[in-house]
Amino acid sequence: MSTLTPITFAATDLDAIATQTGRVAVFVDAAGKLDPGARRVNRLTKGSVARLIESDRWGKMKDGEIASIGYPAGMAAEAVDVVRLERNAKGMIARKAGAALAKTRAGKADMLLLCAPLRHASEVVFGLAMRDYAFEPHKSADSTRTGAVQVMQGKPEELEAACAPLLAVAEGAHMTRDLTNEPSNVLTTTNYAERLKEMESLGLKVEVLDEKALVKLGMRTLLSVGQGSDSPSYVVAMRWDGGEKDAAPLALVGKGVVFDTGGISLKPAAGMEDMTMDMGGSAVVAGVMRTLALRGAKANVVGIVGIVENMPSGKASRPGDVVKTMKGDTVENINTDAEGRLVLCDVMWYAQEHYKPAAMIDLATLTGAIIIGLGHENAGVFSNNTSFCNDFLKAAEAEGEGAWRMPMGQAYDDQLKSRIADMKNVGGRPAGSITAAQFLQRFVKEDCPWIHLDIAGVASVKSETALAPVGATGWGVASLNRLISDNYETE
Image 1: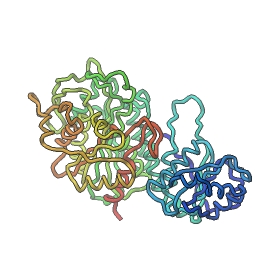
Image 2: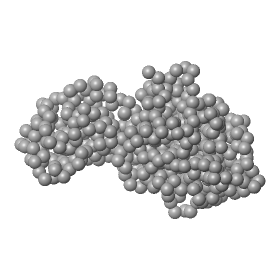
Image 3: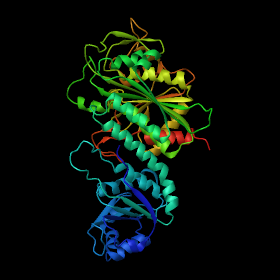
Image 4: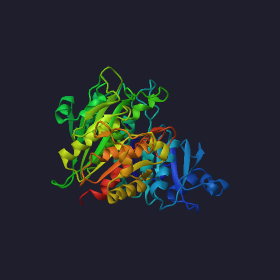
C-alpha cells in the first residue's frame, strides 16, 4: 500500500531556515503582512518576498495560489513558495493551498512549511497529504517519490494532534485509490480478500466468507455474477466496535467487482480496461474502515463487501436466467452487465439480517447513466430517509465532495416488472440510475434508513481533481468519516 508522505512537526526555528534544503513555503495574506518566518525568508533573499508582494502578479493571485522564487540567493533551498492565504482560511480553500504545495513538491523535494500565521494549518497539511500521491508499484524504475515535509509552528504538539485524525482520513483515501487503481490480474478476488483480512492488525474484526459459506447463506444472485469466472467469489465483513457495547452499527456495503467484462452481455472493447475500477464502491468501504481504526473512532461500524469477477464463459449467467436472492425474491437477469445490483442485494440483505444496523449505506460504480446525468462532479444520492440523506449531504458538502440527491418513486419501480419473475434486474434505458436504485430499495427493510451512492462518475477520473491526481480519487472516504464523526460517535 502507498504510504503517506512523511510529515513531522516542530517549533518554529528561524535560524534553521537558511540551511533548509528542498523547498520552503511561507504564507502571506492579501494585505502582504509578513510573519516572523516570512520576514526571515525575505531578509535572507534580500527582499525577494517583499518585491513579489508589491508586484502586479500578487494582486492577481487568488487565495491558495502559489508564486515560487527559484534558487533564492542566501538560502540552501532550491525554491521558496509564497502562498497567498488568509490567516483564518479553512475548509477547501486551505486544503487547496496544501494540494498546490504538494504539486510544487512533485513527490521529490524536502519541504518546510512555516505555518505560524495560519489558524487552521491542519487543513493545509491535510490537503498536501491528500494530493501528494502517485500509484507506482508496477513501474520498473525506482520510485521518484522521495523527501519529507516538516511543519513549523509555535505549538507543534497541538498542531500534530489536530492533524492526526485528518491524516487518518488521507491514509484511508490512499488505500481506496490503491485498490481502485490496481489492475485486476494483481487485485484478484482472492488477493483482495487477503488484503482486507490484513487490516485485523489495526484492530478491525475481519471475517471472510468463501463460496461454501455463501451457498449456505443463499447468496445466489451474488454467486451467479461470479460463476463465469475461474476466480472464487467472497464476502468480507470488517467490523469496528469503538462505540457503546450494545449500540447498533452503521452498515457500509460495497460493490467489489474486480473486473467487469459485462459477462455474456459483453461490453465494447474500447475502454474496457477501465473496468478494473468497478470495485470502487468496496474500496471506499475499505478506506473508511481503515480510517476509523487508525483514528480510534468511538462508533460501531461494519463494512461488508461482495467481491466477484464478471466473466463470460460456458459457466456464466445468461440473459433470461432467473435467480433467487438471499431474501427469497426471484430476479430475471435481463442484462448480465447489470451485475452490481445482483451483488449488492444479497450483501445488503445479509447486513440487515446479521448485524441489525441502525442505518445502511451502499456504494457502487453502478451505472453509466449517472455519469450522463451528473458528469464527474457529483455522485448520485438515493435514499428512503430525508433526515439521514441530509446528514450525508451536509457531510459531503463540508468535505468538498460533490453529491446530489436523485428522485425515486413508484413509476420508476414499475419499470422493473417481469413477466416470469418477481422483478427484472434492469428497467430499460430511461432513468437507468434511478431504476437501479429502485431495484436495491426492494432489499431494504422498512425500518432501516438507507442511502445508495452511485459513484460511477467520481470514483476514477481522467483529469485531476482538487485533492487527487488523475485516476482513482478516493471520493467518499472523507464524507463518510465526517458523517460518522458528526452523527454516530459517542462522547
